[in-house]
Length: 348
Image (cartoon, rainbow, N blue to C red; front, top):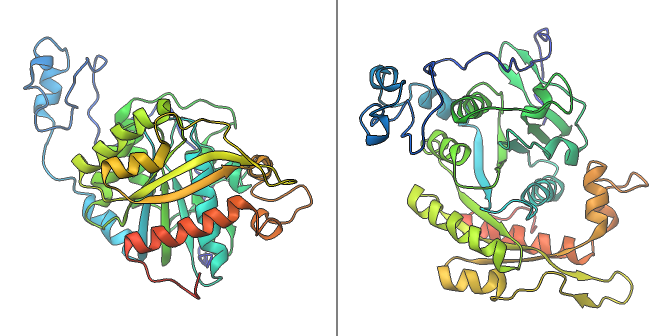
């Protein structure tokens, strides 16, 4: 349920794009190619560091375990399950899937509390899909308050912190990592059943940060999203390899935009051809569970633009409960639960 705020709220949190994050060394030149990172134990020692103006700065930066990890672990101790939504490819519908997954969990049980953490710092779209784009973050003595969509569903995103809706966030890795740490360390998530972490495409800074910060508190695993065509699967294979190297359990793969089911005649048209077997074959080849396929539905796009409600104001899940997309999603939710060892609630 929504956290009760007993102390006066401070003004809305806003980002100062020119202020460096604390504990991040101030570099005098851009990081070169193959830079191990100024906070790495190899900083200042690799061959790429030899001619870098930052070598002395990086070499003298304190190393060792992040002192904030215990604080993050304590802050997240009330969250029962943490699920990552990943894909090496952009445009496959990760954020749409994360939004629908969160709504599916929240609507399945009024007593089930769900949060979404949007770690796509440069392209945050979760607030728009949740219908809370115009909201802002407030702080109290307990920390940053997430934005509540419903009594049992909340969101945290960099979008809430921008002075203007269309402002670009032009950051290098260290500042992105620092903001993700703040989302985990400073946000008052409270007691929660599920925290769904929506990530940007790729296998880079944001993914490494989320994995390292959440490792101590425990992650149930990752759901990998793809579309049927090989150009998507090519990058998704890299994402699966990243998960294995990073020690993240892959709960399974979801094939999104898997055909278009005509709402009139119910005929299925394969808009994106699975030229190499799609997600099902990928799952078989990589030895990970195949969670299912979510078909294209133009009504989902309309609902996402309106905060997951239809033009008449009714929830997409309530109005189209028996649509192919909703039926598929409910089956996927059950399979994710089984893969993560989560007990079903109320038979949902």
